[in-house]
Structures are given as C-alpha cells and as structure tokens.
Image (tube, rainbow, N blue to C red):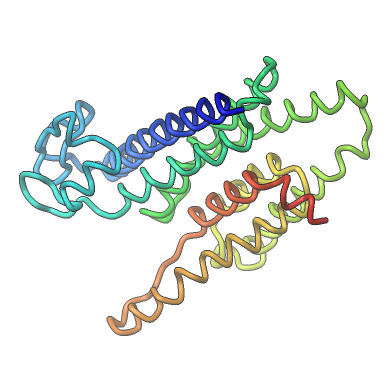
Length: 279
C-alpha cells in the first residue's frame, strides 16, 4: 500500500510537470498563430526556439522552465523588461493541474488493460486540445475551427471507447445510450439555442461545438447540467470584478466563455464518480 502511494505520487508529480510544459507550449503557439493570422511579422526568430515576441530575445533553457521561470523573472522579459503576461503563468499552472486531475481520476490501479490506457491517452489528448482552445479564446475571443474539429474527434473516440467497454460487458442496449443523448441535449443544445436566438450575440458559433465535445465525454445529463452551471458561475465570479474595473475606466468588459467551459468540464469529469454518487 505504501509503495503504491509513492508510485502514484511520483506519477502525479510527473503529470503536473508534463501538463505545465504543455501549457507553456500551447500558450506560445496560440500567440504565434495569432501573429500568423494577422500577417504580423515578429522582430526575429519566429518558428525557431522560444523568443520574446516584443524584442526577439532568444530564451535560454532555464528561462523556459514552466511556472518557475515566470516567477523568477517576475513576469517580464529578461532583456527588454516588457511584461510577459499572466496568460503564460495561468496556462502552465492550469494545464499542470488539469493533467493531475485527469491522471488521478483514471488511477494507476485501473491502467491495466489496453483499452484503459487508450482511454487515458485520448483523455490527455483531449485535455491538450481543450487547453489550446481555452487559451486562445481567453486571449483573443475566438475558437480556431481546426482545433475544435480535433477536439471533437478526440471526444468521439473517447466516448466510443467508453461505450465499447460497457457494451462488451452488458451487451448493446439503446437505453445505455440515453444518458449520452441527454447529455448532448442539455449542454450542446442549450448553447445552440442561445446562439440561434441571439444570432451570435450571446455566445459564439464555436461555443456550442465546444459544448458538444464536452457533452460527448461527460456522457450523463446530470454531469452536463453541473458543467453548465459551474461554467457560468465561474464566469460570473470573474465578470463582476471586471465590470467594476471597466466601469471606472469606462470600457466594455469582455468575458469569453471557452476557458470557463473547459475549466468546469475538467473539474466535473475529474470528480464525476463523486457527483454521480450524490444522485
């Protein structure tokens, strides 16, 4: 038992480091993709090793340590002292925590079969794509269609793997698909209706596709409803202080839903067994 605790702890630490590294990489790629879309050329070195997008200073390996380097440099470029931004730090910390939650949910004990490992790997791949969507939407208020498509493919494969395992044990039954269908109707259906009624003013056209991706993986209407509530609750927590600050500066507060949907999804999925046990 003690040995398992040690192995599991080491496994979770490794997953946090891996997740934070992906967070750093995804945030960097999001900014580079934006520059490419706008046709803006950075001062130098874009597409090579990591650089400061303001002055072109090429970062050393010790400047690229997730979370640690940001804290050590106090969120500024070593050369030009321009603020790096809070998005990098939040991306690294957020993806690190997300990887730990996903890994802990699957647990080393359960990773004993090929199907279990396949499901775990696709869950991580989905987390990476969702992480990129959350970062890009948080920074620029858009959800890239190519990444949305990739996340939807990962979700379909993950949902299929889960249903395949269930059907192999209990056999096919349409009733077993009903929770999945209602999950899609609750989460994706809500955002699709909001999009159609408001003609894109309340939510974007990518939000309901993102919700569809999440609903397929959650696979239960109660979990979908909980994700819907938690996403909007988190958005309100951020929106209220932002509205007060922007009221003083007379600017319009803009809060994009993608990061909150993804955050709520990770939380609900990671503790899905606990939430379902409350029914």
